[in-house]
Length: 317
Image 1 (cartoon, rainbow, N blue to C red):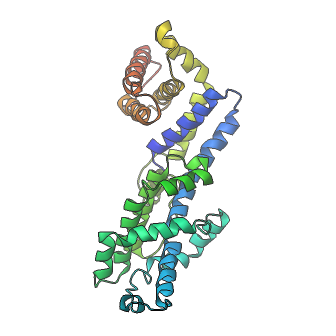
Image 2: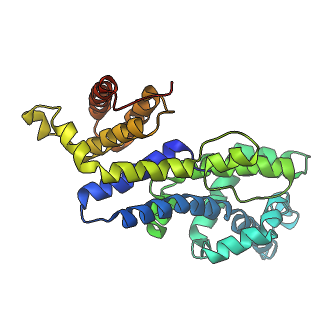
Image 3: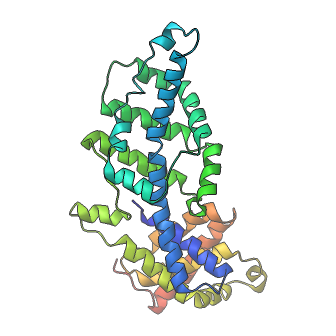
């Protein structure tokens, strides 16, 4: 489920916390990394768990319209295609899916206002009308509709963002990634007719398919351990590479990103230098200042070249 980009980001956030709070122990840092990683999968489960309550909201409104004093012909004979979609009972009837939601206390019960508003928004969409008007009735058709819902109704939903922030600080910035996994899961369900919990790390998925892959879990935990243990050393090397005037202007985010780049370059001989540098430059675009991209790129490149020349960084390729 988690690829190396998001794992680097999670390690970055932990190391940033350590830079701001030097009293943090390595055990605490490890626990925070593990909790953050598992939290992304919890968010995925929570998002996928909306299928049933959203379907039930549609059913409730259909039944309420039928019971009106003077219902219209359309209200008396509504289109029940969405209410009868096959994805909702598939997930609701999956014992593993239900047990996980219950175990992790992931429920939409108290967010009925968001569910109602979401359905009202969906009803006005062209693709929803096309779904209702299509004669095709299949799991594949239902999955296609829910992919529209997750893609077009969730990403910029301020009410949803507020709920996620309230539920877990570890879900910050993870919505887009979790939605991507939801969409991938929906494709799998359309193809296989069943839901399976995605492994926590992408490497586990590849290994399960018989492919040769290095462990992503081992990668991120080793990266955290090396950078945590040598952070002061990296900090001094970074500060020593800039002028005193620039040293006073160093941002903690940039220091952490450059330190991580050095740690990765020194620890993983199989990862090309250009890959490591590009990864931390990309992360700087989202978590540091507008000028950080060129700063992180330039200084990290310079420091890595020095270590390559000294022979303290050795690459397999």
